[in-house]
Image: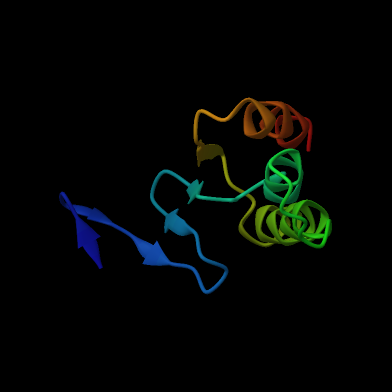
Length: 88
């Protein structure tokens, strides 16, 4: 698939792969979603961040990107979680 003239592969893991520039693009990771909901009194299983990070690590190891782009929301918890991702 081409977007703005750039070949883009939709990875089954839910990411976009731009092979020519070896760029991996991910977004909407919902990191620390359970923590954010818990502060509002809605409790979810606390496993999504760990599972998401494991899947993201596997994707990075499989694609071996030169560039990595992550779209995040402005939530403070998500910003803290993104700091952890940047250390992968």
